[in-house]
Structures are given as C-alpha cells and as structure tokens.
Amino acid sequence: MEYVYAALILNESGEEINEDNLTGVLEAAGVDVEESRVKALVAALEDVDIDEAVEEAAAVPAATGGSAAPAADEGGEEEAADEGGDEEEEEAAEEEAADDDDDDEEAGEGLGELFG
Image 1 (cartoon, rainbow, N blue to C red):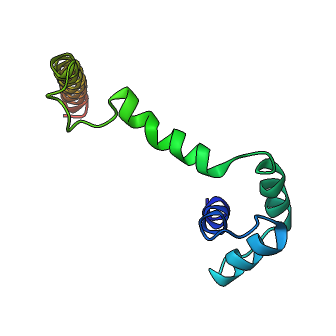
Image 2: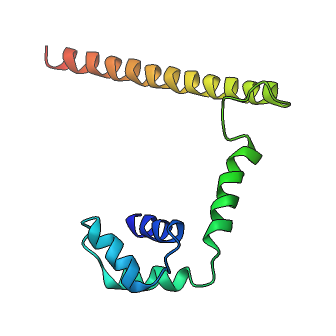
C-alpha cells in the first residue's frame, strides 16, 4: 500500500512517477524498497490518469449510497428496511449459537453420568 501512497504523493506534488522518484519517496519514509514492486507499479501506472482515477473512486460511494448518514434521501426508507433485515439475520445467528450451546451442555451432562 505504501507504494501506491508514494505514487499519489508524487502525483499530488506534480513530480513524475518514475522508479527513481518512487524509490526516493519510499526510502524517505523508511520503507525497505523492493525494486521489482517499484518497476511493476511504474509500469502499471504508465497509461493511467491518476487524478481522474481518484475522482472516479471518490464518486463511487456517493453514487451507491455507501454512507449510512443520508438515510433521509430518496430510498432512505428502503435502506433502513435493508438494515433491519441485517439485524434479523444477526438475531437468527445468535439463536443458532445458543441452540448449539444447549446441545453442548446436554452432551456434557451425559458424560457426567458416565463417569459418575
């Protein structure tokens, strides 16, 4: 992850993202640099517009309603209903776990009788 952060720092500061610059940022941060990872990242970012990619990534959570805070928006009631379903699933899982515990206790009682 630190390799990507270093590339983002270089992009933000207007520096060219190349092996020397990326290595310099990583070494300044105290990272034990792997040359193969630096080369792979530089090659992967060769045709990528980082600013555009960051904007698209920032827009995705807002477009999909990834935040729980705007529940008053259109569809907020639907999201709230979906969340209620999650609670029901959690309760069902807890009940199953409780049933499993009861089975373990019953099995333990039978062993107690065997060994008196």
